[in-house]
Image 1 (cartoon, one colour):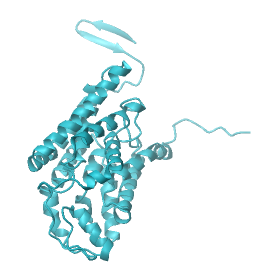
Image 2 (spheres, rainbow, N blue to C red):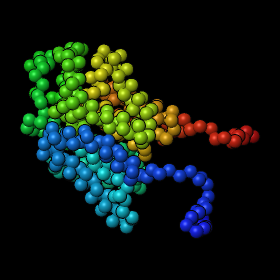
Image 3 (tube, rainbow, N blue to C red):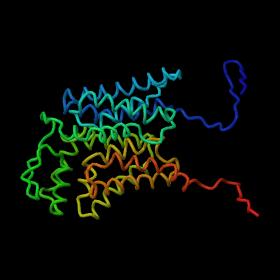
Length: 336
């Protein structure tokens, strides 16, 4: 590379390609955090201090883990690229507000350490780091999570469940629907009546389930800015809706409830762990929706977003290989 200066103009001569974009990694990450901000702030207002503490712990442990890893490995610090901030924010969004503080710290440690840095850092991780942290907590302390105290942040549904049960105390709308469906094949309450609380102020489940409307708003901002490709969320949400309808459930309820919207707009669209090819992204989104619905309707837990996306993360390189276009000008040589 050579530099030639003429007056006040400086010409940089480099090898191809010569296409430059004004978008940086840190700018993209800030847009993601900004798009998540309305839902995150509303979650903290609705859930109170436990939500504020959870965000602080998840973000703080994620940033500290990345800083410590780089310091120990004597590598250049990468906190300013914003990826650890995004991971910590998403990690908090997919956790319940009453999560013990030490679990939140471990989740951030695992998300960054095992989900990202052990692969070589940003750009090398195979799986979405935030989902790695959440999966670790779910698999390691499922018993603790199931016994989290109800301090009023979860609005208990006064809905009679079938199958000999009088009620399901403290359960989410999705869990109650799954229990009804498993017991009788139908629902003991109107799924359509749940649209409004799911859209605006749902006090059950994780912080990312408080307002589906604000998640949709954030996702639309990312789509409008061209930060995410429409193919992944469209394939994901469309598949969840279509299969839910095919299985006899309300497709709108199934899309709004649980972690579908958070996963479709903010997690499945992760640049590193999703396919690079356009057709591959659509197939990836469809696959996420397929496994999410299969897990939700036929698995042991109604919330299967985490493992659906992680499974498809593992298939992303194969999907890219299937849809990589033929290189122009290359001819396959016949082997003799």
